[in-house]
Image: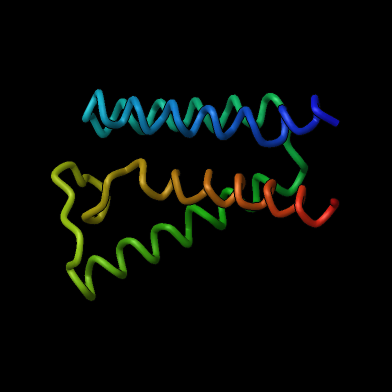
Length: 112
């Protein structure tokens, strides 16, 4: 039970915290993107369900639509480092990674 919880949720949450720390420290879009990709790969290496890759892809697509659409329509946010359609390259990946984490939290709650 605890081992499964660790693999399912704790590892991705720790990796997410590491990503946010490196994002604040490095302030580099490329390195932040590479570190986030490494976090996603580690998360899927430790444990994943077959369809979580699809969920990651849907999260990335939704992230692109909402971030780019929101930026074009409302101009509420400005990114100093925005090389992908006016948003940072890592941002859609973060959406996908967060979809995975939210799914895993939801599946733990539903099973209890």
